[in-house]
Length: 205
Length: 248
Ligand SMILES: Nc1ncnc2c1ncn2[C@@H]1O[C@H](COP(=O)(O)OP(=O)(O)O)[C@@H](O)[C@H]1O
Ligand SMILES: [Mg+2]
Image 1 (spheres, each protein chain N blue to C red):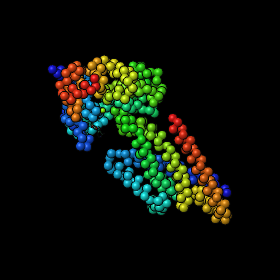
Image 2: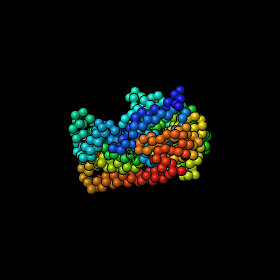
Image 3: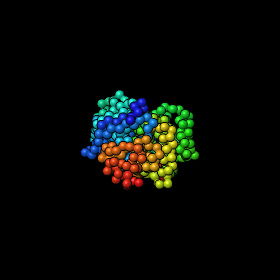
Image 4: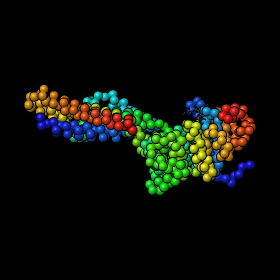
């Protein structure tokens, strides 16, 4: 089953790229949801609600076939875009909750020293919010890793897709899919463990 | 008689502030002169914090004008962050930055707001830590400190900006009794150096020692104003009499 290493690599590629972009989208969405600017706030809320109301698979098709074809995007790009846009909405809620978990006195102290809202966010609020934000982000990472198998339906050669191709050539469906499932299981168990160790460390501080 | 040669640090005119239907500040006029020490007293909920916080625009007012150090803080041309650089604030709950060491608490705004070099900021910070008596805690995280020490860090943090005016909102109310003295000492020294200070506190000993003027607030209004002695001996307003009986 030579497909496994290459498949894992593509799965990781999709997952890592998606999560990084989702984090950026999430940060701005979370800030938008907390903005007192009605337009910004409205747009961020609309984004979160629309994304949460549509199944990921439908979003993938929409971006891949709809937008991806329109703009001639390569499959990996469309797939990553779709995953990132979807997870960005969830990340937005995580960032929002994390920022809200910091007492108001912190930003008031920062502002009273003459910091701008951006300086206060960057130097005072976010570094503290990270503790609250990291564990759920870790969970999203694992969820995204699993959901990334959906991109196999598109022309992205991830672990599942390569497994499917291998199985249909060798007619070893049971063995191949058992292998694929086990590989996913091992990877997610590994990261879940890593995340809970990280959570422990944060709590110990 | 008013000595009008003195510079006005804070000038409030007709300041009114609502929280929903509740009038937290009701048409307040107040002048505070450079070098003056004003103590604000009054029952809980009388609007003391709201008044103080409106001076650096942590609270937005609904009517009136506030001029701080010559700047109308509601003038769209005026950068409120610039005004805040000159106005230090000390909170009841300290609000030290828990993710920064004591030293970093003092240098952060100096570096990012005042644009000082790290070296310059640290020199200023160490001098202030000496002054408030916690230099040996420079590299400790403030959550490891007692309340009194945390509040001294907060005062030093505000002073590191070298402000022209200091606002204190019940700086000793959250402290255990045995730590009140160490914080008040720092404030008394600051007053002796000539800092302009507006202090919300019920520490009448402090008021007696440093206050040029005591202001009594109730129902969002300034009901009475006078020397500390005046309030000890013969407050005229009935609410002020009641209040003084309660706290003494
Ligand atoms: N953020 C707020 N939202 C609603 N009401 C508030 C808020 N802050 C203060 N108030 C109300 O405004 C009044 C004045 O409050 P405050 O200025 O904090 O009084 P003090 O500092 O004298 O105790 C009180 O009745 C208080 O409940
Ligand atoms: Mg108060």
